[in-house]
Image (tube, rainbow, N blue to C red; front, side, top):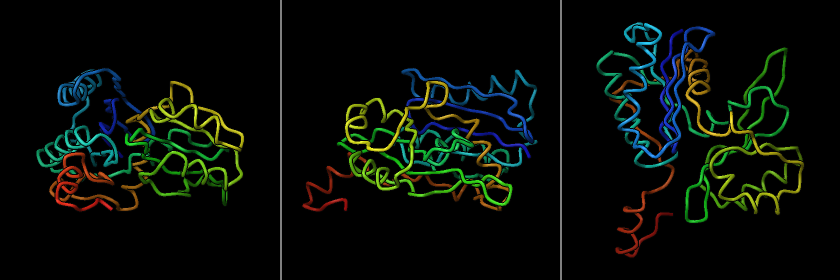
Length: 241
């Protein structure tokens, strides 16, 4: 199975190509450039370096959200264009699921979090469980937008050691240290941000299950309204609840 993956949900721009059980190439940049400047050049560079023919792809994977509204729109437009040009299906992967999948095989509960501002994080709770000789990726708390204190309380309620990762950890480091009552650790720099290689690997399993949409059907999942939409509703006397 051949999958090209793109993640532009946060500050990191990341692309990767999976061929069977091998990551042929991955290219990630965590720098202050817009993803519209980076994604296609990055993909072009790794395909040229590996002499990979994009027409041989089985599918294109995208971190569908949540995340940066601008980043998600750019990533969505990129995969829709590629999918239509190459006539390939799109595998939509929840951003937090793909982040958690980087921790494959760890025995701890996994809690990725992205800074969502306004005192909130995009987050979820996950675990890898060994059953019947196979490792299963389990979603204990589906991705959501919530106050960091609320997700910490849910982690504490599980009573299991946890590993935190994502840019939300840096923003909320002090409250994580103060409120987490179970044994915890922060993921190291090599696996604490979005990574298209993990996204591609996760997407391959989803695609094998038949989980894909057409390029025309793909839509990003923002989880909550944009700031402009919230401000409009506030002016109209409504809420985004």
